[in-house]
Length: 347
Image (tube, rainbow, N blue to C red; front, side, top):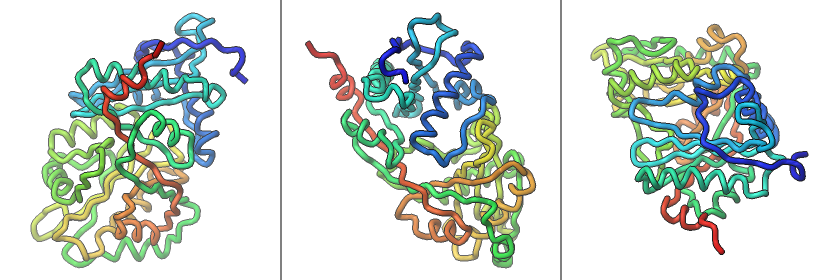
């Protein structure tokens, strides 16, 4: 459709000052990408998109560029591509979007190039990106020299297919000495410290994980993370297992319902502290979460989760709940200096 007619310019772009038309155009392009690459995923709505793109955690920055039709004035043009680099810790995290009708014209490479050069100038030595299996992104990033670092499997649960009687038994299957609590919006202030401690103690580190979606494991960062989620239009729901004798958070599970696609929720961390494993906590808290979501979010249709392929216990729990494996998601990394050199124009 656009292949012959469109001339494209790339410019740095701030969603906070973008026109309503630009945001609508970006959402349309994003939905065209979803239709091509992830046709079973729900389309995005034009709801709190600016907040989603602009808000970051304290100490982090996101810099964005758009590719647009250069025949129209800025703010009035059609957006055909978008790239952002989130600068956090010691890594830059890329997100790249190109309309399917303009692929294979070098636009994606141009967008990666401007983001990589900025990350290099900002002093970052590496860039990470998520690439979805069975999409053109895999070959695209490999051709640019990105190397695979980590693999997760996405699974999707359709709520209309849930066996709620079986789920009820799971929700009540926790051992004596524990109670399950539900906290929409986030844990109350007195639980922030034990909650953060549970996340710190319960995470099974993986040295191959690029940590493109870092978890918050100290009270202040956890508080900042929850505030940032709300500002971005991502409503968190929390279910905890409390060890009654000590008051410690023995297990937790987190689900976020995005305003941008409220029909499908995202599972975040599910953690059971090592000393409390084997008491049915993981099944109980995840099952309880689904009951709460059914009541709190009547428009919700699906929940999606990601698990490392070696996490057999959680994959088994998800299968018992009714999750169906969808496709693999890959984390890729590359040395920034090498990438910038590779993308430099040659005579």
